[in-house]
Length: 265
Ligand code: HEC
Image (cartoon, rainbow, N blue to C red; front, side, top):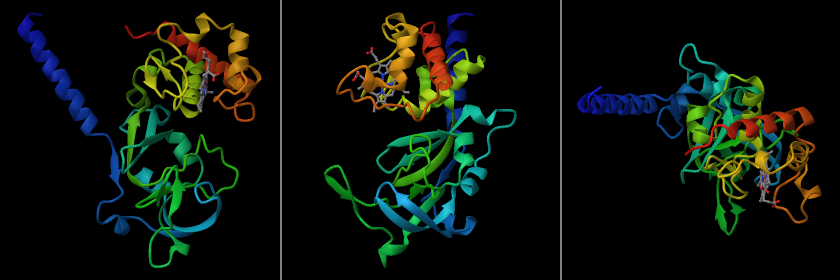
């Protein structure tokens, strides 16, 4: 390939990528006409984690919204994320199968708010409301890591996991243990930890320049992941003992091990 061909194919590649990104299935919650295309219902939430009390909302079933966002033909639903975006750009995602596993609802009105749609609550130092939309899960006792409650939502969209998580996603995704491990890592860990510099920064980066498996003994790594407070007093890392089984911890370790061969340059 000569230089000009090379530049041309790069431009075509970039165009193809950007049109791909633009085609991601997306649902604007705030668009007019939403009320006509979905059926609202009254739902009871026994213990709302934001208001810390029982609540009743007017809401649309999440499944009805997701059904409007088709996954492209021939692709596996568990390779896709359902992404919730809030007014301030904050994003939270769940795997496509998780989003349909339990009955989630997109609430648009708090029945106890009278003529207003919402009641205020304290978030850090600010007093805010969930306006315009709030994701809620009526079933009691669901794991909040797996079933998040984001508020001030504006859009629900679909994105491939590899694209959403960037360099933290495994390149070798054919290995089912690595794949499962990454799915668990994305649910419980990535909001605090980055891998290949992609992810949160509350905890340390786990792959660059050294992968944790390069300086932790494997058994101890698994033990630490399940119950960090039994290793370090005062750690900010929560215990996952009641949420993650030993097999699941092993899958996370497999995923972390794999990333040692997939370091970004
Ligand atoms: C709420 C934030 C938070 C979450 C969620 C979290 N961690 Fe951590 N993690 C930390 C912090 C902070 C540290 C830093 C060291 C400490 O306090 O012990 C840490 C330390 C670690 C370490 C030790 C790294 C080192 O080099 O010392 C590993 C490994 C680790 N976390 C893995 C995980 C895995 C795997 C998950 C998901 C199951 C997870 N963490 C979830 C906050 C978190």
